[in-house]
Image 1 (cartoon, rainbow, N blue to C red):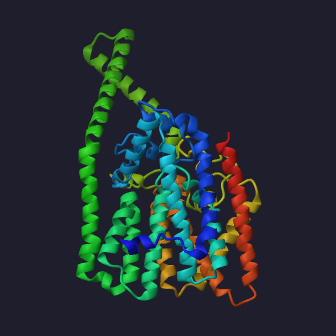
Image 2 (cartoon, rainbow, N blue to C red):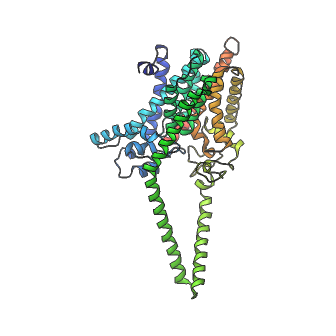
Image 3 (tube, rainbow, N blue to C red):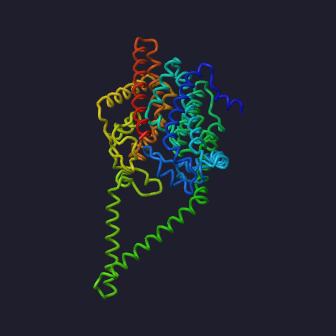
Length: 479
């Protein structure tokens, strides 16, 4: 236990940069708390409705506020199988605050978790730059600052969603895996299982990245029967079993109640249409009346479908490959190239001025262009530097581990289209891999005359993005 907790100790040489990062992250959370404190400190008889109707920052869901205020399995169980249970201790702390003060302390309780995860993600990421890639301390802090100047790292660090928790676990996984690769040691079954349960419990698809890390670290031993059984098959089966049990015990009763309510509402609607038809028709034949009612019901259904198809939540979600339990989350209609330019490498890193932090499922179009060519120049420069970094580190097994994390996200988001219409929301899952690649470029140019110009470029980019994104974020939260 002492060894595990030791990884969280802030070392002497880390103290000043870590303190600066902590103040930065606390300031971000203060902005969000200040924006909603009057509404969210009130005790409510329906916390879910209060938070969902009031909280609006891009497409982030305030379900964590709801769960920490009144515990329940509100997250999608198959995508976040253990997240609600992870929030239970915070819920108990908040229950104590509400009893003691008569006010809901959810914003402060959740902010403490967000600050912890964002802070240690920064610390571990900078350790990756220094200890595993091997750049100078100054370069490591510059790259850390650049990472935290990215728009949706900043936003994820202060909104009540799961993405900064996932970023923390993924960076921790990379850090541990990098140390193992350096020392030539294996990732043990216990370490792999713990990382998998925590990471997959927060977001199931990210659990795959822990298995990928196991493959890169253990190499041939990954394929041993013991490792495959105890580090892959059993953990996957257990977490899937937990998700299924959770659905049947917690969600299925709610699902059945919703289905019954929907069926009752549909029956009432049909009866009202039938009554209106009978009151206005001149027909007397029973069969003709029944046929007329069926046509009226079908016409009303077609009109409703036409109205819904024009709404953003329907029009922007994209056409799925199929309508199965998981295939319904895919998207084959959202344009790929425009999404890569404006969202994947655009909004994720630089906020758009138009439709600033609006929700794609309400008022924001899927594709929003920048007003200025400067933003595209910054995006192009950053992309070129990252590609150069990948080339410089092409012989590093650790870099390819980090790139496999990015590659996995490219497959599920860009190829399959999962969440592609608002892909920037998930960007905290991969943005740190971009600066890891950039670290290899800084490492390669250390003994050359390019070192100083490259440092200045990274510094200038970090300052520009920080100023750009901070200005827009503050403007949005103070409206």
